[in-house]
Image 1 (cartoon, rainbow, N blue to C red):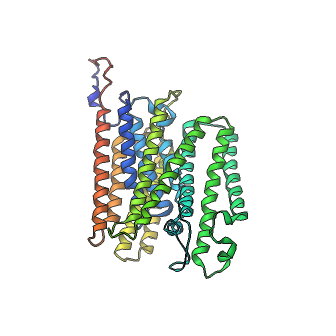
Image 2: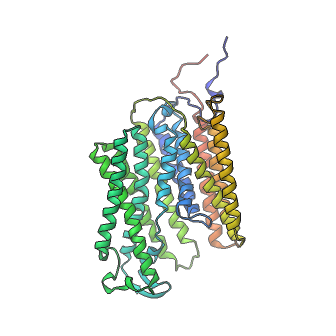
Image 3: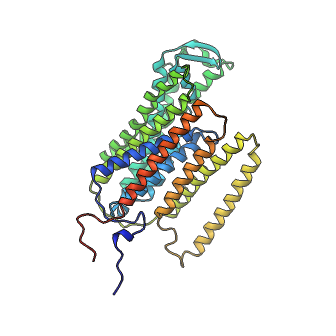
Length: 435
């Protein structure tokens, strides 16, 4: 007689056909928010910043999504449970890191600098809030577009050309618009301040504005394309994720107005944690929405090689940022070391790729799935990297507060996550006794 495996003996993360209740979805959304606050705060820490730090946050959210997608036992056969979703979230969030917004923080405080810290003028605070809104709009919007594409499943080459062309056209039109009417977005533009090379902060603001709106236009082009194709569900999802980042970006900017307060906290980090919390809750809401909808089943094609390579790259960038941040804190010139590390990893990666291809006919299933243990280990690496770049430094009220919040987020989010995953190992209450 063939031995049967009881539900309790299934490995963590195996498909167990446990129906997800509203309480499960709510718990998953809370986890996404708590962990997102940590991810986004680390995103702007020394060693990270820009696209590299955004990849860290996206990889964390994408990994959580994929882990939770296995709980109901059918998601791996549906678009929202595909490993492509990890890549969509990781690189959708990562692209947003290509824009800068630091120059607008002073505007929130009613200060406009010609050449920081000199030449300060009074400016309306709403200008800063408005620019942060647009930053968050494209950051979440492009991530939402990638998610919508992953959910839509395979499409024709013609559709891909249309999507990309629409995004490029939107970006070009947006840059053309702001370059023709810069006075709508840049304070005191009519005075010619932006033409004086001595006003470096003004020039930086102008360049940042064009960069931000090129990404906004890219998102709007993607949005219009999906709406025109009749993909209403995808267009709504894109807009929801865009606003889910835009609002905490803008509203959370209020923290910057407290930088002169007697309580010496890292108000910038408070702002970043607000963005991560709002963005995480948004992803949790999307997870809730798409997993509750019926979707046509499809063949589980495992994890495509391209997706595995991209995820490996994102994880390496995460670890690399932590190493760079620690070396920078120790005031070590890391350029030569980092170049050597990059070269070594590139060679090892190429060697692994060729060995994998050579052994493919003998090991067809090798890494064709992403085991839950490996995903949990990846989340652990992200958390360790976050602490590695945060712990160095002298004691202060601000650092103590920050570390306490980080630890609370990680412990609470991690323990709740393990509880949800462990609960997913059992069988459905309505399932027949396997004996």
